Length: 119
Image (cartoon, rainbow, N blue to C red):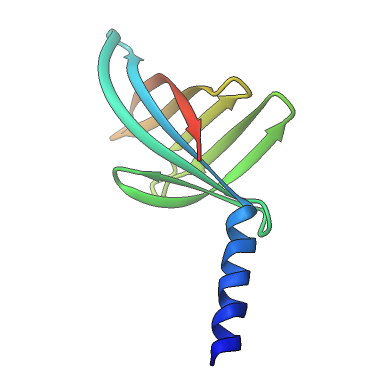
């Protein structure tokens, strides 16, 4: 039993090393009526070992498509209703989160601006 515990701790620590978390705070946004203040918090979790990425927000979490470039990362989410959300983080940890939402045939665009920290 003791050996099993050590193996599990080793695997957990190895997996943790392969995971990067971006905690992002967006303090302003714009929509079709202009620019506004307000706060949106999102967490982007990247599991390098499994080659998977997730967005965690106020409505839960979803697996997303990750696009990595040397100077930034983008995360593309397609919601269950078919709307598209894109979060891009630069190497300097500046971030933008764009929501391309259609509801009842109406476009509801919004774009949030902020920054992230890596954990």
